[in-house]
Image 1 (cartoon, helix red, strand yellow):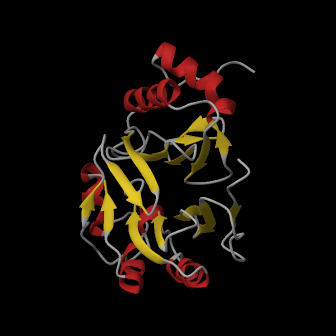
Image 2: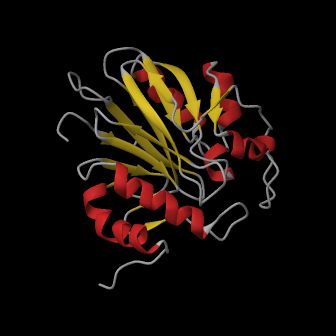
Length: 232
C-alpha cells in the first residue's frame, strides 16, 4: 500500500504519509519489534520489544518526535517480551498482553537468561480495541502458538500485526508449552474467513506477506481443521 512504509529502524519516516511503521529484528531469535504510529499524533505503539530492542526503539521514538503510548506483546515468549521492562522504564508507557499469557512475564525461562519480571498494566481481550492516535486495532485472540497469542488488526489501514500466528507460507510452532495444533488450525481458519485478501501481514519474525498470498493454504486449513499445507 503506497501510503505506508516499512524500514529496519534506520532513517526518518517519510513526511506526508499516513500510517508509519518501523521494524527491526532483535536478539538471537531475530524477533521483529514494531514501532507504529498514525503519522499525525505523537502517540506510538511498540509491539514485541525483543532482546536489545529498547535502546534502538527509543532512539527512533525520539528521532520521530513520538511518545510511546502503549507497549504490547503479541504473546509471552521470551523473544517477544525480553525488553519490556527497560522499555517501560525509558518510556513510561504501560504494558498490555492477553491475560492467558500474563504468567509468562515472570521472567522464568529455559534459556538461562535473566529477565526482570514485570506486571501487565492492561489486558488485550478478544473483541476489544487498542487505540493509538488515529489508529484503531481490533484485538483478535488467536491461540495455538501460546494460550494467549493475539493479532492486532487495523481494518482501515489494511494491516495485520500477526505475532507468531501467521507467517509467509506457514504458522507458528505448536509444539512448545501452551501450544495447540487444534487451536492454531482454528485461529488460521478465523483469519482466513474474516480478514480481507488485500491486508498486509507483519509477522513476529521474517518478511511481511499478505492474506492474499497465504489464502490458498489458509483455506485448506480452515476446510480440513488440520495444519496441512497444500501440495505444491
